[in-house]
Image (cartoon, rainbow, N blue to C red):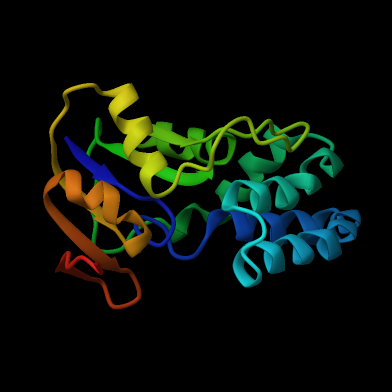
Length: 188
């Protein structure tokens, strides 16, 4: 099985951050959520007082402010799908496993015939429905979905994915701007 991270690996940049910016431009009331999201970012990445799931819960507060979230996701990808590319060339049937929200990545992955495992978020309420799909959680979710499966190759742009890379026969660090793939070297 060939497995890919999504943001920074198959797509330039972070789709969740870009979707937030997209929504803020189209629906300015979304900007009301910025102060609480900034405090959550400080709590997660600065003070380490909350985990990534708690930060994402704060970030997704903007979702209920979007009148038709499914239509907005569709418009976002019609304008941004060209950012998918780089040195990886996934084939139909390959797996994407991402910390991004499933509702945001589902259709764009499905159009390419890619299976998706991602963070579960209610797109209407912004409620996070389980742990953020990153680090060891990616491994847990992968094993739950594909018990006994062998990861032949794994591709990611981040050492946060060391746990998934350890499962793979071969793992590669992706650098989209440079268009490069390098063999994975573990940080620990």
